[in-house]
Length: 69
Image (cartoon, rainbow, N blue to C red; front, top):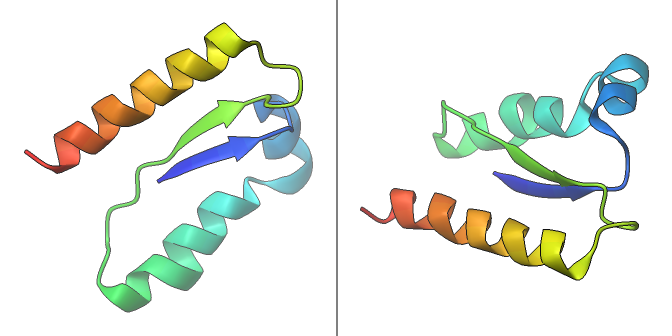
């Protein structure tokens, strides 16, 4: 699972308890037969640079390639 976020990871975990992880791993994916959920979160998007976004795209491509092999 690849997600973007504008919330720093520490704040998301301490204040919200990582709601996207809970939604995907408990409320959505089990119902379509997915039992293992790995998430990569690219953050923070709003203040990211073009270089950071390009690196995120490269990372996303590498993750997708692993799934296709």
